[in-house]
Image (cartoon, rainbow, N blue to C red; front, side, top):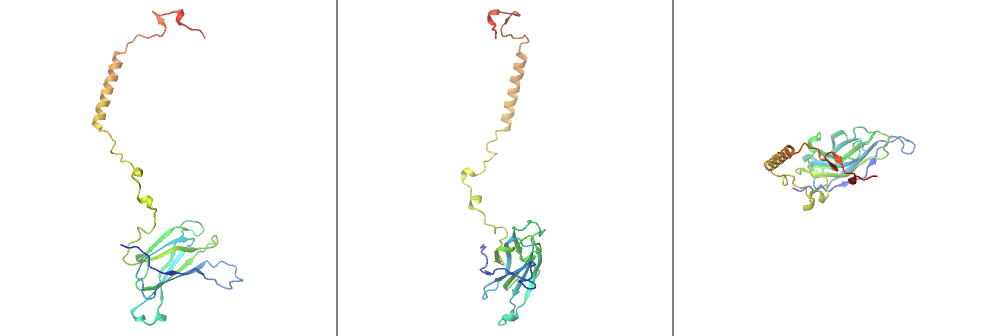
Length: 219
């Protein structure tokens, strides 16, 4: 089954500033990313995949085309299908700040068929991060199962050369019965040698308990 994303235009984030942009020094902490879809082909949305870049909370809104909206583009309304979804458990730390996320249609709060546009509202309340956005944004149509294969792994991880394949550890294991027999034989030989050992002390230079002075050396 194909897993190609829907062709779309992801516009640059637009920062929402309250008050005068020149005089108000407070960080806004909110930005909006609009995703434009081909007008001639509404999307039955299945999944949204993206890489986070220091966005703490995400709200997703979609614009849908209804049968009564034919020829009335101005009458289309935006609906919120995901509200303040947490991407970073703690906005002041880096946990989740650069992770990949997948939002499937069963996680959304409304129907996402016949979608003509998508709007992503990003929030970062922490003053620690100066810039935040979403990267590698992709939309997938309904009917495609992409959750298990959306990360592109290098080909060498899945196609190892024969000499790189892990060895079969079971192929070189000897017969346990044969090993047991050989161990028993070795034990019998050990007991026979121990039984035949002489109790007399074997000296190196002594003869009848005396030493030959010619065999001794002085240091």
